[in-house]
Image 1 (cartoon, rainbow, N blue to C red):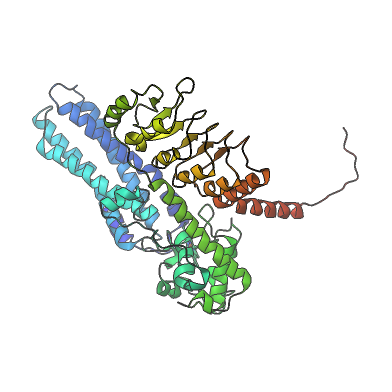
Image 2: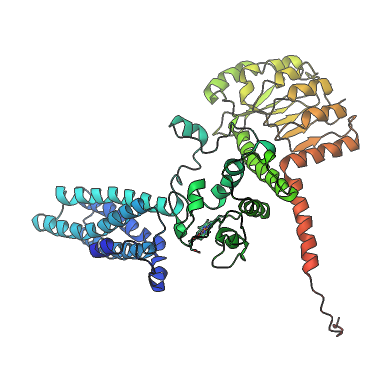
Length: 506
Ligand code: HEC
């Protein structure tokens, strides 16, 4: 095994069967990890005084661990034969991986020696060697994961507050507002992000498949093993463009089938860029660019901006009082006869507030009493009450509000303006109030609003339809609809009529 690890480094043209076997490495490597873990648990039980006597079972598991560890390591070495991974990391992984298999035999020796002295109980050499092997496995596993998924795979989706807490950079500089296309730098803002999204996982610092790296301008221009990767001024002869235009199931297609693909527009941008000389810098506004490519650039920039925007919304969570704190306040508030406060779920301090109607109708005064628990209110049901525009000022201070029932209240457009900052509001019932079309101008900016009830109000049908349209546009769904229509047209164009003249029965 040591020979394998030493002498197989960077063999070009490895035979096909080695790769075939090598591809089983990612599946099989879980066996030694699992076996080692089981072994540790069994040994722990066996060595504890009151535990069961399972020395024999430990021995069997250890023997099998040795076998599967060797198989996994050999397959790993085969998988790495053609190279294309980060060399230093691969080297370390190959060595530590081989060691973790060799350790199994060492453990067998240590265990036999320990058991020849005493049938059970703790043996410092054996048990500490086992513990060291487990630590080694964590390192090996992590390196292997980095080789296949790229670095930062585990932490990529770590919530950003935690990231900044532990001093990790947030990968996307979200503060940067959307860039206008004229001010965009051709390589930095347009070309590089395309490579970054679709190529760098295989052609970057962690892996450089085909000896090609696309993570900087200089490296991209160096090209890969075939040489003609990017030929400035001749996109047709450039390997990179050739690969992008192959059929999706072609073996040489880039990115390979099943991986995130660039859009047609992005491919057109890359093609134009190489044809125009593959410049390293220059503002889009100062270059001569065909209209189709320019609009593809606009879409590309908007696409990146949209992703950033969507991720921002859930961040604004205003902290609530804990349930204990809230409960103390609620007891005081509920001395008022006309307010009901219910906890929404046992694992959350959020509450639903209901203002009963009837003899003592809920009013502005009652609403203002909710102030101490304002952050905890997610639902407010105060329909059929005497609440007015002025009262709604209190609602403006309920930042976590998701559902608001105002039907048959005295509320008008003026009051609706207080709802402006309720970014989490999903549901709003205004049935039977005096609101007019103007209210919709305020409501259209609420990012989460999904259900709006406005029967028997002054709101016109056409304004309501406009509202719906605007909300839809903000979600980006409109764009999809157009794409779907275009695709439908393509499908019907592609249909072929074959008329055999034979009448079908029925
Ligand atoms: C999932 C991994 C993966 C992704 C993603 C990927 N490639 Fe590759 N690429 C490879 C492999 C493997 C090779 C080497 C085998 C070959 O030549 O087909 C390669 C080779 C290439 C080559 C030929 C090397 C040379 O000599 O120039 C080019 C060009 C290329 N890729 C471009 C791209 C571009 C452009 C993207 C992004 C749009 C991309 N690749 C995305 C895996 C990938």
